[in-house]
Structures are given as structure tokens and as C-alpha cells.
Amino acid sequence: MFQDGDDIFLTQNRFSQEPDEPDEDICSLFGLPVPDELEDIQPADFQLLDQDDVFSLIGNGISNLDLESAEIDDDLAAWAEQIETQHPPVAIAATVTGQENSNKRIKRIVSDDKIKRIAVKSTADNTKKKMRWAINVFRKWQLERNELAKRDELISCIQPDLEEMTKDELCYSLSRFICEVIKENGEDYPGQTYEILINIQMHFEQQGKCYKFLNDDVFLQVKNTLDYTMKQRASAGLGIHKKKAETILVEEEELLWQRGILGDSSPARLVDTIVYLIGLHFALRAGKEHRNLRMKNSQITLLERNGETCLRYSEDISKSTQGGLRTRRIKQKQVYAYEDRTNPERCIVRLYKKYIDHW
Image (cartoon, rainbow, N blue to C red; front, side, top):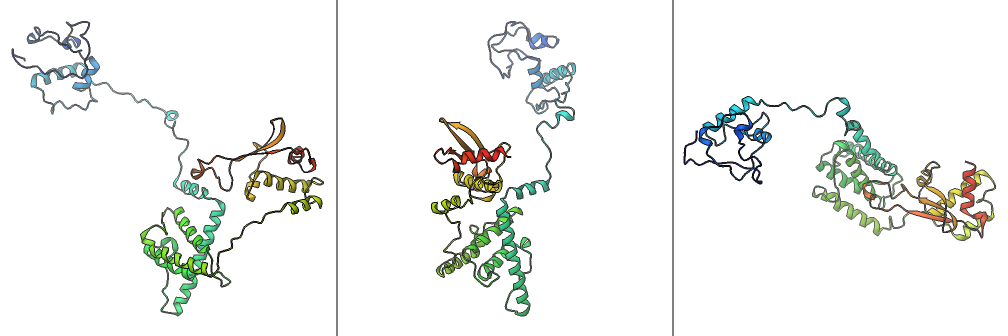
């Protein structure tokens, strides 16, 4: 095989100290005869590969090494083939067997319809109502416009259904919708025109179509039309005064107590008083936040703090904190209401104790 003076190229993938048994060579590892030409070669300063390493290099049925394409001589290829013959490939057994091991990372398979329902449920109920209202307004406008188009050839007919419109058709239709739509009583919409457009956009998002009416250049005409319309209506005084809840004055609250509207003289009156005081002390801003209060695992806890009896309200979800991605960084509030010993008849702690005692 080898002649004196021939260069020997040894491929190493690991360097270490001289082996403990320098006389052992790779041929003896596999029970092969030592060629006469190799007997006089002195041990080199490298560590011999073990059996597994050799298999990975010369191929054991799972190696990526291709002997035919490797740059080796015929004698080395024959030698490798002899080793492969004596040591056939080892089958790799499956590590995961049985139904009990096949779904360790899967709770349950979710269908496409389920994903769509989850997307709908992630939207607040009030937002879904506004979306339905906006879609109904658009469709009523579309029907009336198409009826007019039948009698006047100068009026274009808008035939496609809203969900089936292309971007160009949407741009054409929404631009005219913004300018033409009015309330059923004949009055113009104030700044709500903007709200209608945004709710239509959110409706498309739930349908899997991410349209941006105010940012996408395709809808530039829609943006300009809306901007002009809002300026015109603002100059006419529309939408300047916004509807909002009015504040209950201290004098008005005093009258409620004096006239017995608030108090604990009857079960119904006690419930009304608890609803009012909880909203007042813990800043519950919407009816749904009151309805979300529960007795089991309650958000309201009776405890002692700094030597005083108090109620602690721990917010979980609220009107502005729904617990989703948008509010994950918002710290949920904790509010304390302390016992009023100077005026026990109006003390929220005493009244709350009385309420839960009769629950």
C-alpha cells in the first residue's frame, strides 16, 4: 500500500496528550492485520479516534460522508470497506413511541373556525356593537344610493358588497360615503364620521384584511375627504360638545343620605348604597366593571392595615385594562377604603360587612 518516502496525510478532529498505550493502533482496534509497511511508523502526537469516531468518519449508515467523492486512495477505500463489513450499520430506535408520548406539547388541536372565533372574542363587546352599527350605516347608505342611481343616470351605482370590494372600489365608495351620509333625521354626523370609518376598518381586520384607510397611499382620497369633511363640520359647530357623565356634587350626595335614598334601612337600599360607594371609593367607571365584581375570589378584601380596618380593591380587568397585549405593561391598581369611625352610618366598611353577612 504505502512506499517509503510517501507522504501520509492524517486527518485529526481532536488533539490531546499522547495515548496511554502508544503501541495500540487503529488496525488492532478492529482486529485487522497490521500491514508490514506500517510497522516501522512511530506513534504520532495525536489521540487515536475511538470506534464511534471512526464510524462517523467512514460511514455507518447514517453519516453524511460520501466515500466515492472523498479524496482518498484506493487502498484506504478498501480498508474502510472491510471495516464496514465487519461492523454493519446500527439501527436507531425511535425515542418517542406510543400515543401517550406523542402529544406532550399539544393541549388540543384548534380548528380554523376556532381561531376566527377567538379573534372575534378578543374584541370588546362595546367595540363590536360600534362595528355592527358602522356596517349597517354603510349598507343603508349603499342601498339608498343604488335606488337613486336607478332614477338618475348621473349617479354611479355601487354594486359590490362591502366585504367583496377591492381596494380601489373601497376608496371610491368610502370617499362618497363620508361626504353623503347623514343621520336618519336628516342631520349631519359630527366627528362621528371618523369613528364610522375606523369601525369599518376594524371590521375588515376581523375578516383578515388589514386595511389602513388613513395611512395607506391607496386610500389617500379617503383620508383627504375625511379631513375636509371634519373641518367643515367643526367650523359649523358640530361635534364640539361631547357627551359625558356629570359629576355628583357633595351637596347632592348629602341630600341622598338625608332623604334615605342611600342607607341600609332595606335590602334593596343597601344594595344601591354598596354599588354607589364601591364606585365612588374604588373608581369603577363603567357598569360592566360593577357587574364583573364577584364574591368568590373577590376583588374586594376585608383586612387590617396599619392598625385600621379597611377594604382593598385589587383590579383584574377594567374598561381600560383588559389583560391583553396592549395593557400587559400597565400595573393594575389597588385602592384602599378605610373605616370611618366618625360617621359609621355612612362607613363603606361597615356597610360592606353587613352586605356580605346576608349574602
